[in-house]
Length: 383
Image (cartoon, rainbow, N blue to C red; front, side, top):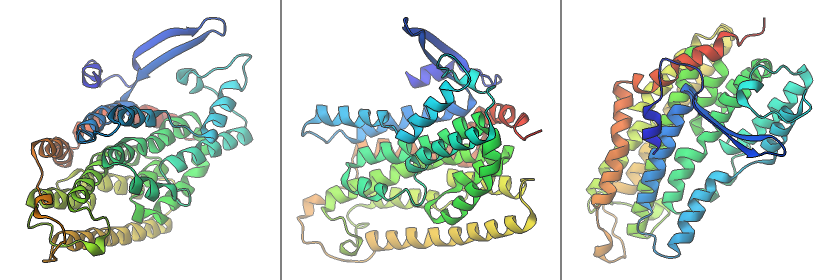
């Protein structure tokens, strides 16, 4: 349904399309309004794609399966009190009635203090969702306890809502405050570079190239992150071990899982020809060409990014060596070492194709958002 809906999207039109406006509560004159533009089209496709494959990945779950699928989809409804406060403050300001229509709020101006407060409230909400240091401590425990199909939704879709919200709400509706906060976003992204925070760098650069790179990074990390969690989960299900120091030699009985895990790890560390490389390269060019930053800050941020590019292969390659290489014997029956089946291979190939496709021809994604990004930045800087 998602792909049929996006089929009718006109790429040359940067405005909101395919609108749906229905009355919700007549007494209060509340309407249910939906629409998409170039900024949201890629995220919509990613959501439909990863959700479909995550549902397929959860096929082996048989215990309370109905409740499991219900709770998995209910994750989309999770919110934040800071987000709610920001929405109410923005909707109630300067009007006798609540205004939550995005197209009307784009043209709304706010006093400087109120705009900064609204921006900060949304920033906290999205920082928890992304997550950004030091609001990230909930994420490791969540990934450790959840089923790997749920981790696919979490890493591939839900965490991307924070980055999308920064672009859609903070950057588009609160441009003056974003202009003030953007250097801090770049600093946070530089400090957090070992957490793959290229998206924050792209959003903070306030350039056409940087913002398109941030959108590309959102989609690229959605594909790669979801797949790595799926592969880690399927491997742990087979060997019944979860600690790296207990693993070793898995590549011998499970060569297909080893091949795909290695391939997506290379994509994560930005190997040329894959989507991760293109996304980081575009963000990097957007940052160094940004007129907002002087030469010395650019050099410092570039240095930190270079450190991140060194650290990422270190921990990824160390993980691969510990898990898959060597001849460590397991005290488990041999029948547990079953390699990927047709269902898992189909899922992995479905995600691997867009990772390679975007890496070779990034216009597959950039063509969706370039016009909308230009429209967003055209009147962005304060006069």
